[in-house]
Length: 262
Ligand code: ACO
Image 1 (cartoon, rainbow, N blue to C red):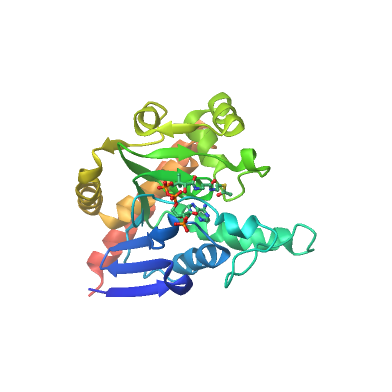
Image 2 (cartoon, rainbow, N blue to C red; image 1 turned 60 degrees about the vertical axis):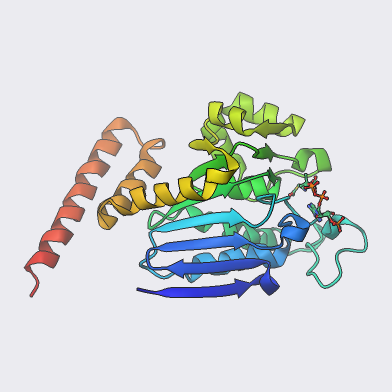
């Protein structure tokens, strides 16, 4: 069983792999896990190098907050000492650089894994989008979610708008983003932004229970089922029925051929 610990982004990000479970920890609690380009690129590196046996990825933040969003010092004229600056929109490569940051979020939807955000305290802006990038969210009762970007003269550009609209619907997504108001754990549950809300002291145990339940299903069936579910909303009923037949045939055939091989 593979077991490893890796530090990325000069220690602001930690990856622990323990067999089928990887835990990604935002580890700058003294800044409430505020994010820099190095963190986004580090997340992308984690996604690109995840061992194939990993089935569940837990994303968590150290300290009182899950993540306070972008490191606001990067937006100041003099930037943050020792940190790579955020690119200027006047640079011709601006969109390309943002695509590199988005890669840190996009891999969390990969059908090979189930990603879980374990959120205590604040998840603001880029931090809320990180929680939205995960398949499932378990929140502590003290969680506070906020899409702060429009209040700072920005749009949310770290892949958060797609899941937000698909979870809460367009009218609520407009209301949440354009007021930049804070959502509590209780409201998050009502809006389906959380699968579960638990007392803060029970967050780790609730995540561990969910991880164990996810690992109890067959790995190949779980991966094929997530891929099917992900295409359901853009397929017609007939297309989805066909996709189910094809996925079942592929799954059963691969199992039969691995049973019959010596
Ligand atoms: N960027 C840089 N430093 C931060 C950030 C941030 N986003 N958030 C917190 N910190 C720092 C604080 O400046 C403070 O540093 P100091 O000890 O040197 O003074 C330290 O982290 C602790 O922060 P406090 O505000 O004292 O912690 P508290 O728990 O009371 O509040 C909270 C936490 C609510 C997250 C608050 O810090 C906050 O509002 N931060 C800014 C959130 C924000 O607007 N983020 C940008 C979102 S938009 C985007 O992500 C694109």
